[in-house]
Length: 276
Image 1 (tube, rainbow, N blue to C red):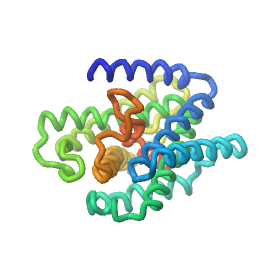
Image 2: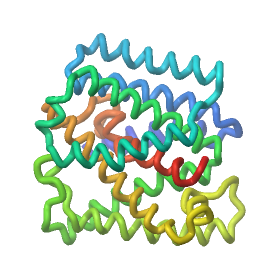
Image 3: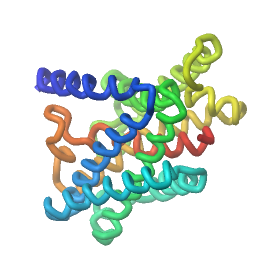
């Protein structure tokens, strides 16, 4: 399994890195749209739609956003980010508190449309992040990676109290706190780097720090918490569907949603606070 995971990861890097560092952001934005369209297919299957219907939903998702992008450009804006912030910071905690059973009680069409809107907003935020600059985009991704890795090792070393035992039994409060501390350290380091190294753009940390110097550390803490929340939401949906992974598209890693779940809330809420 480890060998398969490594091979898949290397293949993904071989595709993503050359596209990421293209002078134009368009190749990366287009590739991201393909991945998120696959995420719509996975979402449909996990919410009870037949595979054929889910495939058509993924194709329609990609087609509509592609046409919109070509016709009108990227449509991410403050109202879009604000709506996403309300959803993730106010509505989703209530859903998680109600547990797995509450998700199945939501009408199927509402569940599907919610997922489509979340993925569309995440793609817009991802596109805006790449258009802002590679340093900005990587700093947002690094926040999620750092929170995840630190939470894993912190949970292994110190985990005693379960964070959400009925949704994701492996997560602990100690792991989540480890991820939070790691994100704050990462933010401090990246702010220093931005001040001393010439890059193509400010990081998310410097962008927020300059706009909200007194509240920036609270915002970084919120983003760290949201990365955990994104993971928990996907775990809740998978438990409701009775599946281990969102799909087998990425051998050894599961599906697209398994890889990007923590990014889904962080990308638009980061855009909201940084003002991109």
